[in-house]
Image (cartoon, rainbow, N blue to C red; front, side, top):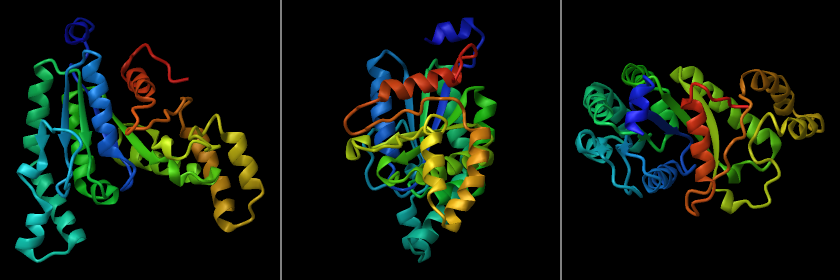
Length: 266
């Protein structure tokens, strides 16, 4: 894969950030996808950017906890969990060069994919300087930098729930200025889910449900749905189970289409 990408004139590595609310299964999905890639002959490196992680289901090639540890910060500075995380983000921002140098080096070595597992508390990462500084730095390393916005399928109990989750994905793209697409994880927990998480294909269901809901929340989402329709891509959103290993090939199809200059997301 490395030599093919060089011949075609591409940057070497595809960089994928996994972003999403706490409990959406980002780390498990990073583990499942990295294993799938390796089993299919790709060279992969995995980055952990969560300074408060107690356990990781994979062995990171770059672990931010080696340099910044939220629990240690909490003890040393007398901070609570949230305060320690915020302080950790500030310290990580100061050490971004360590991560970028690592990614640049392994990219030159011919790694096909670099997967970045972001902190469990999405807002602590996304609403701090580290998020846009990181995305800007990554874009200087590779032209293929994307984000997967991981959604827990169990929260999609109504069509408007997915509309709200889609809006968060679009907001993430606006914040990071990189292509961001939703991924629905943990489908093994909700096998009878009607709205599987594909805004364009489920639009009629969403509109029908919004029409029957007279709450101010639904009225607001009717207007928001127009924005979602404008900016959502014509893609079949992968429905996966990181734990069961279901749908990982579809996740890879999406990543491949994002990075393929001749591809089409429709």
